[in-house]
Image (cartoon, rainbow, N blue to C red):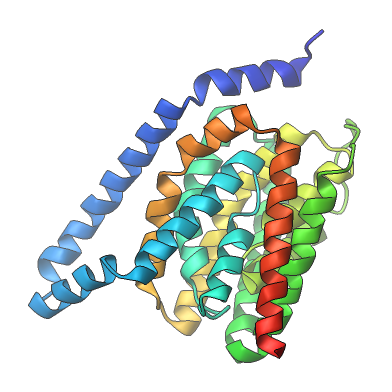
Length: 301
């Protein structure tokens, strides 16, 4: 007999159709374009317009579109790993760890993700509030440390961290977890640590916090929903901190990640229906671990 979680899953499948998600992505793109029009009208001269056009037709922009599409597809299907997937790919293309690119782009994607989970009733208000403040504090602390250290020095550590996260996702695919009704413990230090490593590693909030909560037996639906809702504020804190402390660079990368991410939602919805989550986790875990090993080999080779 189907329980409450089964009913919720049916409800989610019916309401979150590819057509609905595609419409959300289109609306978001229109909003972003409308917000950019005043800047284009009043803040750009002919030379700047040429630079923007050149940037949007560059190889780097379209590489970022592909990365954003892949990362958001993974995140939409698994409920985690957008930042880790994006950062792993971008590190291999030479984008430094301290660049705000992933975190700024993640503000847009996590906003829609968190709103969707809230609308579908997947957010536990009490858990969300316990995650919010320490997550933001950890993100600001991580961004501050990251911008005070030379990017070339920290690259190997970030690659090792991403390797560990890839193996964590891989191991999660082979674990059978039991759900329990007890309230989660040690949420504040978990969120503090999750926000900190997310800022430093370019991702990790979902794999660290969600994996720990679900691994401890908490309800997967409300754990994923609450963590995703809080992630918007963590990404906002990281993105703003890195921008204020290190400046906003690699704008073509940010634009590409956002555009790719916006159009990934219907693809993720289809993958959820067709491919088992366990298979996706194995693929993503192997991909992240392999790319991290390649990055490490390049750094020390």
